[in-house]
Length: 442
Image 1 (cartoon, helix red, strand yellow):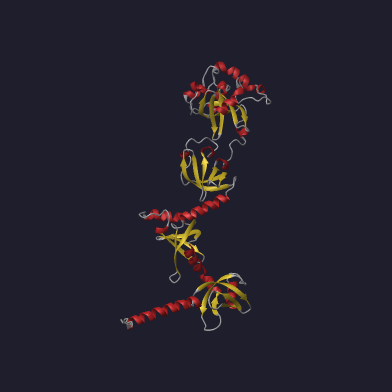
Image 2 (cartoon, helix red, strand yellow):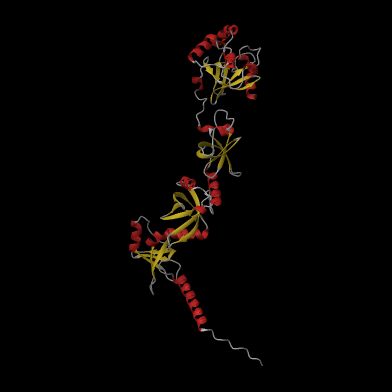
């Protein structure tokens, strides 16, 4: 029969190590069960009496907060405590019998550290404003604690930047909102470290959803131009980019948005459309500006002389810009030499002829103009009062011919020939019935 070997006794060194380990584990379990001095824990107020408050702090024994501690809370403006409240407490003493000595007032002072520890565990995003900066990064306030965001955890601040550029970037962030995640909490060393990089995408999604819920058609908002395309301008409203179509950039025609705006420009906009499902927003800059057609009759009375810039020349005539947003039609029948001339033979885009206002229709945003009804003496008086040198082509279009001057005078003076009840076109001549339709097509 074979005997099993007897177990060898542990060496003295191994025995000491095992006893030491067991003792540490026992103390850790005891601390978790009973707590230890200096711990900050969340508890629920069971009862409030004249002597103080009894608080369930999740240990073997309840905590007791003396009345003086509660009075300190009230004097510091931290509010009153009542039964059922969830409050932080700090353990002050662990007597062998009775309640655990605790303080809510001192815990309130440490409450921000407790919140930071909870956010570190949960990964919750903290939103705040940048309060300052230094060579190493950004500073933020977390309640009564000052937190820090290192350069390596700031979005948009890459390595290798020159010191002056880095300082400008950091300074530009001061006072602006920022989303952060807690990276490190060390109460003993009073260190609270945040990361913007770890929170950036989730924070942007949160801001976008929140802003989309807030936006309503007709609202006026402020934003910053984020990008420019041929068809319009994108404006950052603070988390959501909205499109201002080229037709909504201004009351006048904008050919190239890049000539009017640049990235980073602050702008005011009006919300035209909100598509929450597709996360698209339509905006208008034009509607934040005064409509140039308001009071247009006062600026361009009938039979007054105006100079404008030819913008387009078509078969029906020339479109002339009198001011940004105000464009009139010089119909082919109102050219000098009509009906024997074609618009393209006497006018080109960019020219500035002298014209007479025939009709103003603010409701339809139309102004009828005439070149042939400008009398020679009117043209000469204008030239004397405005001693600018006209281009030869401008003189050709603006200066009335001698043989056409007389009938033009008769028509211009006899305003009754343009009765108000008739639906006349801007030109007031033969073929006027089709002029508006032609202008619309043009």
